[in-house]
Length: 385
Ligand code: 0RA
Image 1 (cartoon, rainbow, N blue to C red):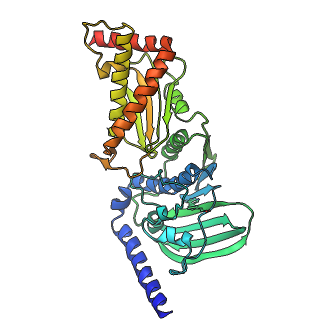
Image 2 (cartoon, rainbow, N blue to C red):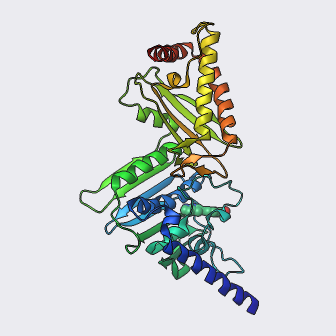
């Protein structure tokens, strides 16, 4: 008995030191304490719900900006587990909110955690950086509630009622002694949730801003996923072919790509790793570009669109006018570059490259009219240059 009490205390001290470290160096965990870092708190909480959706148990996430800049995030997933750990005597839910990096450990066999914010730090960091956080969980026939202040438990998980529903609701007020501002920008959040909805087809994400009258609100759900994303990006552009080209492959590194050519001269390729926008690109982008160059050149040669003595089309000619979204899921992503938004995992290049080579090669053979329209544009880009 005494031994356990001792361990319990040791564990508690470690927990507090962990969250104290987050409060001392918030930038290390969320990038900054500016409005960007503030928004990051919301993304961290919503990412956990997206993981539950990716595991196949959550269909709707609702975010509310309440008066006073309180954020409320509700999902209809299974609910964070409420069972008490026999050794720590703390509920799994409380552990998720008070132990740094504990989020992923409760993933069970539901697969790997693929979503995640820029730093993938989780709920405990949000808790540490909030004046208060309250969590309400519905599962196992009950409603459970817990509350924290600046990361410290002020109400351990307790059953407060009965329910036959499941889900998790998190409300928090960011700490104004840490953040430069608590004033959330509705449009920034709306844009990010639209993007998240495009990246997880079929998932409904709704947002409501109750701070001012009239309230602002939006609801996103795209059955078309990345195809809908490309259609959205191209909505005011003239297209070279009616429907975006869509390529998908599950496996060790799941890859999903949609792209469509327009009459524009610019190249717009958006890349994501685990739903994180990789602004600096990286190995997934490299694989996609190499495949485009190779496959279009092969097709152009085998169909006599470029002559034997002519040089190959260059990558930039082949990408002129393209709008593309490349989304990969990587188990242990390595982020590099100035802003840590460049994928470094070298095996991803070959995986993306070979799947695009094969799928695009087949597509072009089956859709010669589309192939011709795109290649005519590539060839004229090459001549212009
Ligand atoms: C791990 C296991 C289970 C649920 C969750 C995590 C979960 C976490 C979050 C965070 C926000 N919403 C969430 N919803 C669910 C359930 C395991 C089981 O029921 O067997």
